Image 1 (cartoon, rainbow, N blue to C red):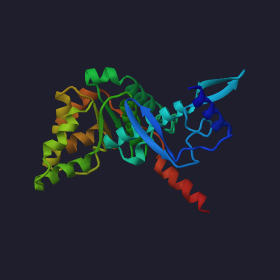
Image 2 (image 1 turned 180 degrees about the horizontal axis):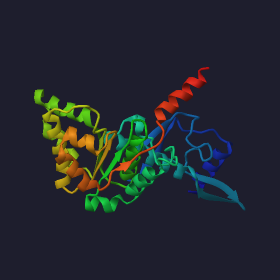
Image 3 (image 1 turned 30 degrees about the horizontal axis):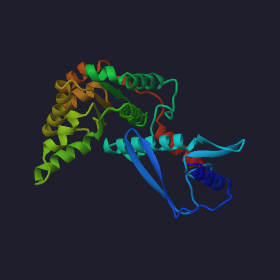
Image 4 (image 1 turned 120 degrees about the vertical axis):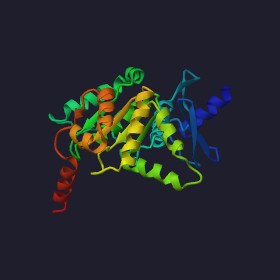
Length: 281
């Protein structure tokens, strides 16, 4: 053992060359493990040369201490693990980095930000009661950002979630009617089982067919009867939803969510586009 310590001390001091033809570095997080290969002369950590420990000589004795890179690898593994879970939940890559911390808070949208953050923080309670959340506001106000931030936090807490865009879900369900390999229930069953379902942009279409209205109600009612939360976003108010989707949908949502949470403020998409145009000049 002492010989190995001396060899590693010499290696980290640069007194001998690295004899390894290449090496794998282990990343662990929450029971998940993955490995990354580094060719000769390359390292994740230049301090310990990926030996996980620092070797130092004190009074003629080789003293071994853990290297800080172990914690860095754990954090990186947790980040990758969360990224994989968000992808599995159906959250698009564009929205996986949306958090409460990088939401652009203003005086007008702060109440919505606080409501969404409080909902995510207390999700364990809401999961038990089935309490849901409805975010409503004009286009570009940050509804999807907040919905993604809620889903991210819920998944980070260890719950299962799913993010679906309403019109895309309807299209997927309709496609099963011509499919011999996938059924409608194969699409709906996972949406019933997850701890949180995010139904994004429920007001995407100006008019809905009777079949589309029925499917949206079926999905919402499925969560309602299972007493499982749903997070809905819409750029239309209650009256519009009642006219287009029916009183039954509104009644279920009001009972599950309580008051709808308005997301006010500037249109951030227009603001970004304006800034981009200014940079071009």
